[in-house]
Amino acid sequence: MYIEKLPKTWSAICIGLYLAGIGYMAVDTLPEDFGTWLVVSALFLLVLVPCLGVPISKFVYHRIRIDPERGTLRVGRELIPLADLDPASVQAARAAVPLTTAERYAASLAAVDAPLPGLRAKDRGGPRLVGGAWGVPAGMDTVTLADRRGAALLIATRDRTAFLTALAAATGGPA
Image 1 (cartoon, rainbow, N blue to C red):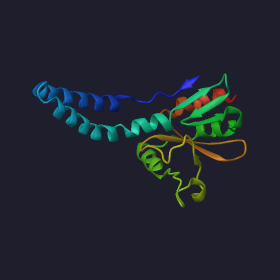
Image 2 (cartoon, rainbow, N blue to C red):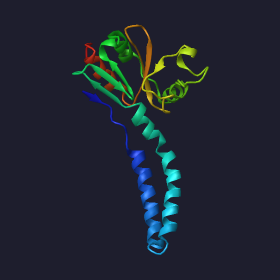
Image 3 (tube, one colour):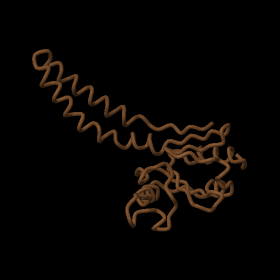
Image 4 (cartoon, one colour):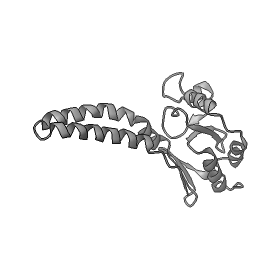
């Protein structure tokens, strides 16, 4: 089994700063101004929630789990049978030269699959983004695989090498 762990550093920093800020305000205002403190704490949530948007999106749409016992690859909200993946495309992706950081950012920003005319991957001739998201978070690496019907699938990953090694072993290729 392979499970891609998502980083929690950004979330921990944002939540820690929020808690430190409302704690600092609590020292000066509680218990006299409990209502004011509660309102200001709620208003600060309006800043916290957008800061946590990308980590939540990565968790929902880009988490990866390979389960060889069940024969499935789960990417975000999608479940793909491993038997549907072309092992040759997995080997080709493993053999491909990894992108540099700048190339990875450019590729991730160009990988859009929004449900709007002209922004669909199939309309532009690109691979379908797997997982349910409309795009790849900036800086995440992407892997293009093919299924046995020849359809191109784009999967966003944090650890390309570990993901492709586990996927090669699960699809029956050399690990």
